[in-house]
Length: 478
Image: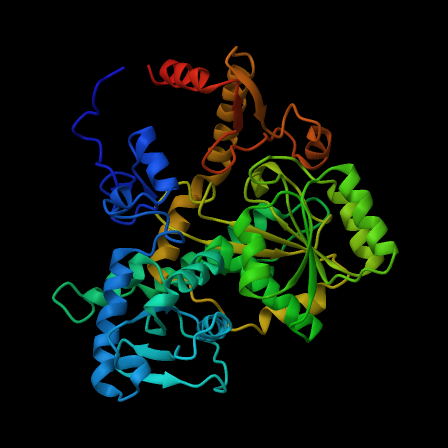
């Protein structure tokens, strides 16, 4: 094994892909660095130039927020803005900005305010009673949500769990707008790219029995934004905020947190996709438990189990709740989940993009859902979550080879899983194929499709001991 990386490799804390300023992964070259990042070691954190944008607010976004706050200071005598220990989040959506303010108030902040900034240079305070707007095309106005420094962690939680913060491309554009580096937004091309993405995603989700219309696909700046806004649509559908949802299976942790922590939704948790939990859910419903929606993943992240979607769909029809599925791990290339659910939320950041340099999310609606008309209306009446046009252009370009890439990645992942399972140092591998729920996955697998590659990692591995880990890593690296 080489003693050091070749000079062309990035340094600790630099973006991946290498030399891409918009790379959404960060280079952690050693196991010690990885542990330092996970344990929030200040020595490691101080060297991070970037990170996954929901977990790490990009430096360029922080710089823009600081400049806009400095600009706002002379325009206001409000102590909540001009005091020195105030920071701000930058969000493109009016609705999400007010939701952030409400969340911070719930966390104890009485000083959070919302400021509306435009590229033209105006900055003004926004009242919570102000009528929500449909928002702009995604680049000419932003919202600053101020917060005291002692609520920085809470503000960061909103940014992370909702995925509604602005992108680094957006921040760079704003910072360059009044400089010699100013660029024009190619809106005609961006609008065309947005239309292509709607068509592409609708085609991927369509089946022999259901042809998904491009108008039934909603695009978002991140995958978590799709999850977050689906919850808001359900609240709008029900006409109240005090909805109750069931969370079925071992879901990605931010899904549970955005529902329970950010939106303060009453969540009933069924932590595994086992038949026992399915029976418990059914018994609870039979005994009078009312829920408005059930969230699950197919397959789940990170354990990669596949819930019995057909049975969950039967329960949703019988008891009148919406079934929302996150298919990010499997992708619509491998899976055909309609008509066995009502809404599918997807992170486009992972396999759909494949370029590791842009964020995105989508929601697709089932035309044959018994609540299709009501849900479609709820989504269409929502103020949109602006998707920055330059990000849209990158996402469209990256996703042109989505089908071939997913099939190849799924094949590679399956080959790797076979090697891992036959290796003496590996105790267990979690992968949709070869586990108890494979028969459920196979029921929804498209012809000649695969079992996914789990977004950024192909499987979850259990080693017998630490020495086996070291030995195995030495084996695959050399």
